[in-house]
Structures are given as C-alpha cells and as structure tokens.
Amino acid sequence: MKKLLITDLDNTLYDWVEYFSQSFLVMLEKTHEITGISKKELTEDFKKVHQYHGNTEHPFSVLELECLHKHFKTKDHVLLKQHLDEALHSFNSMRKKSLNCYEGVLDTLKYLKEKGVVIVAHTEAPVRNSLYRLEKLGIKKYFKNLYAPKDKYHDFLDERSLNWLAEHDGFLKLLSKDELKPNPKLLLDICNRENVQIEEAVYVGDSIVKDISMANDAGITSVWAEYGKQHNPLYWSTLVSITHWTKADVVREESLKKAFAQSQPSLRIQNFSELKKLF
Image 1 (cartoon, rainbow, N blue to C red):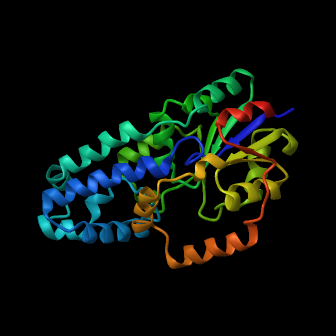
Image 2 (cartoon, rainbow, N blue to C red):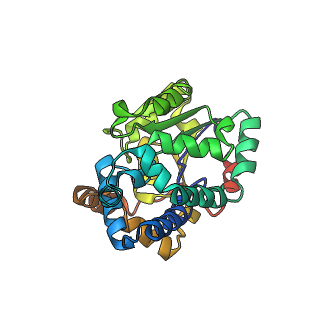
C-alpha cells in the first residue's frame, strides 16, 4: 500500500510557465511605458539579474536592472518602487489571475490527506518562490514538508524575508546547491525522514529527464504528469529570453537528456486526479 506522495510543484500542480510569463510580460510592457527604455534592453538586463541570482523568478528583480538605475539615477529600492509602482502592480494583478492549480489537484490533495497519505513537496524552485505559491494557492495545509533549495544568496536576504522563512522553520527542509535533480539519494533520504519504505512511496513530476529518471533510480513508483509539458510557445520563448541558465547549465541539461531521455514512468497521467488509483 502506498503511504507517501512526493510531488514536484511547477508544471505539476500548476502551470508555472503560463502564470509567470504572463505576469512578467505585463510588467515588462508597463516598465517600457513608464521609462521609454526598449523591451529588448530591459529583457537583457533582466537576464543578467536572473543569472546573478540563479533564479528566473528572483523577487523584485526589476529593482536591480542596471538600465533603470541609470534612468532614474538611483539604486535605492524604496525610490525605485515608487517610480515603478504601476509596473509592480501589473505583475501582482496578473499573478492573482493566472496562478491557479491544475484541474483535479485540490480535490486529489484533499482526498489523499483524508486517507492519511503523507504528502511532501520537492522542487528546484528557490524556497521563497515555492513557499509563496503553496500559501497563495491555499494548499500548504495538505503538505507535511517542503523540500526546496535556499536562495543563492540566502544569508544576505532582507530581515523581513528571513523572519518569514523562520516562521515556517519546521515545515521547510532547505536543500543545498549539491542536491539538484536528478538526485535519487535525496528521494531515499526523504523516505527515511518520513519513515516510509521505498516501495510505499510515489513520486510525480513533469520532467522525464529530472523527475522520472530520479524516481526510477531510487526504486520509487514514478508518475509522469504529462500535461505539464503542454506550453504556449509565446510563454515558453519569454522564459528562454530571461532565463537564469548559464552556458554550463545548458551543457548539463543536454548531458542529462542524453543519459535519461528514454526513461519510462511507472504511470503516465493527464490529470492529477489519476493519482488516486495508486492509493
């Protein structure tokens, strides 16, 4: 009998590509309107900031753009927030509209929780981003723990962010940069921490290369959320234009594809609710 569900977050529980790209694009357009700076120049600076932080979704990255520092003649975040208030508001407004769980997610999480299944989240998205989404979607209550990496410059976060994370200390299991997917040892550690045998665990994710291969190597039942790969080309190209990935990251990804692209899941699903059959 299965007792533990380990689930990926982005593009497994919600469409991260669509939600973030839509929010970014309206902010980009509004920033262009406010400053007159070309969207091409803004996009190039966004990419630099994202690569510096190792996070395409780095919070308030717009406040760190070099072209905006020159335009407004300041690096002060308080002043920049005042200048860019409409742009920040447009991002938040679109985020509220577009961040939603996939069909079947809420019902299934509730169903599994009521059956006594332990549910934990495992993601490569930095902890602030992933924790925010669990809270905003109202699904944190279904999870026992969140396994997520620290921000690249975690120790230099502002006091407000550090205090917020500290409030969830028992819930968060912070991962190091050496625990990137696909890391089967980490899944074995999660099973051990949750006091569950390998054969009692299920892992669900949208990536064959990173999620399915990892679960297979750990000997855990692997479920491919096939629906998580169905992205709008416009939104995907938007992410590519501002990605935090470096050349080294691209090389690593290509090597992973060569090694694991043929991995086969234990189960393919087109709706998160299909997980119920395993429990």
